[in-house]
Image 1 (cartoon, rainbow, N blue to C red):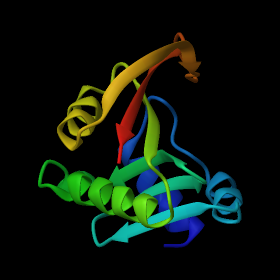
Image 2: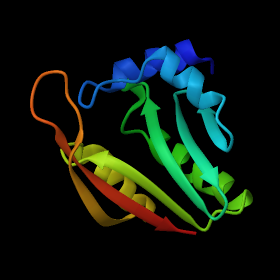
Image 3: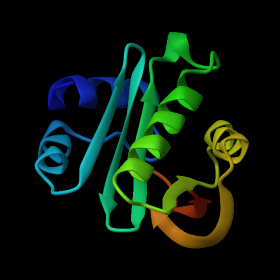
Image 4: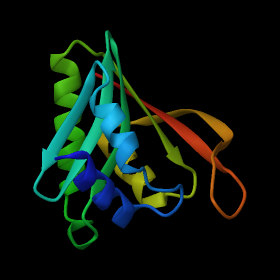
Length: 136
């Protein structure tokens, strides 16, 4: 997927926190260690550095949500992270994103910390981020 397609899908999936913009995706895709998992209904984007990986974002087309596509994206990202030598995967998710939290827990992620006021909103107070970890 190209940066515009990633940003378009991200905008369909996120309001809070705000969706990422085209230039943000373009910059990330040029970053060493970046890992983009494409599926017909969505994508997962992460970064792998040595023994650690971070799942930066995941997006599934709204009409395809709740049909297992997110789980497939996560599993494929975890497999790629392991292939590249990672043995731990981290992610941050808004405390208010209950569907994503449930998805990550089903995948085997465990909450290890939280960051108050981490996700800035255009209108409203900053949101708490929960930090999850998966051990490969």
